[in-house]
Structure formats: C-alpha cells, structure tokens
Image 1 (cartoon, rainbow over the protein chains, first blue to last red):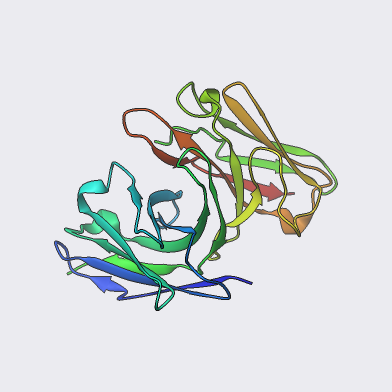
Image 2 (cartoon, rainbow over the protein chains, first blue to last red):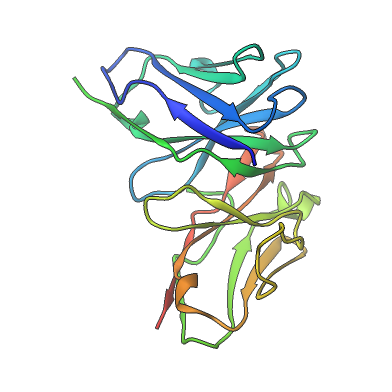
Length: 122
Length: 112
C-alpha cells in the first residue's frame, strides 16, 4: 500500500520560501505524477501543481505558477514543493498526493499524505 | 470563488438518500472532463470516493454512486449512515484562460 508523508518547517516568515518534501513508501515514484494540494483552515481544496518523477515534467496552477517550483528525487523516492515570496494567505495544510492523470484533463488523486500545517507569520 | 459550485450543506436522516450536486460550465464539466469526488473528515486528508464520474475505488461501499450530465455532476449516497457525516468535494479540470485542476467549494453532509 502506497503511503505518503509530508515534512518541512511548520512556520515560515513572510516573503521567505516555503519548502516541503513528500516521502513515498510502499511503491516507486517513478512513472507517476505527484501533486501538491493545499487547504486553508475551514476552506476548500486548491491544486498547486504536479511533477512527474521520471523526466521531471511539471504542471502548475496558473494562479501560483510564478512562485512555485516542484522537483522529484527518484533515488530518495521523494518529491518536493518550493513556494517563494509567501504571505499570510499561503497559510494552509499542504497535502501531497499521487496523481493518476496522463494529462491534466484526466486525473484524480488516489493516495494522499496526512497533511502538513504551514503557518506564515513573523 | 470555485468554478465548480456545490451546495454548502445538505442533510438527511439515517437510511435516507441524499444527493450532492456539482455545477460547472462549458469550460470544465460541460467540455467533457471527468468529475471525481472526495470525502473528508475533520482533521483528516481527503479520500477518493468516486473517480471518472461513476467509478468506485476498491473498498468504497456501493451506497456511494456518481453521475454526470451536461455541465453538472452528482454524488448520491443511499442508505445514509451516521459515519457518512463529512465534507464532500468534487474535482475536475477547467480549460479556461487559467487552465487548471479545480475543486468545488465542498459540501458539509449532516446526518440528522
């Protein structure tokens, strides 16, 4: 059974970079897409973007594209999210998830991490 | 403001049947993109409930079913149980200028 676990700082200062890593166990990250999704407190879900482990193809939400970078490390079975120039509006629970979509128009998230709360505050 | 519109809340008594709607437009559901549904309990990550409009992952009870027509999709929960009380989200893809995967705003299901 595939399991995902987010890790990274829980507190980030405004204007700095939010960095999270998702470690996958129970299966290889190779040949799959992997997404990041966030959820502000008491609000809905927002897709941030995705990365394919082999070849490092990325797709980002246009609303965040200028600030987002994603990468994958197949040797560690991990993938990562960097979100720069953060503000309080970026405070949320960040989830990593396996993305079963050969294209953006097709695809859903079948395995999720437990989520990591990141607070942006000085 | 989500491009997929869901009712903020629905409710039903145990044993009843409830429907949660997900209304989109010609740039998402109406364009033929699949709709997927997730169930989320407080403080827990979402769980895939229905994929590609009508399909249930292994382990999801057949009380849960999905459908899609035109610019809308629906999640039906039959034989409502207390354990079904949760938030439900639809998800699809929008091909407008800001093309992206999109979620509905979520629906809180209360079992009376």
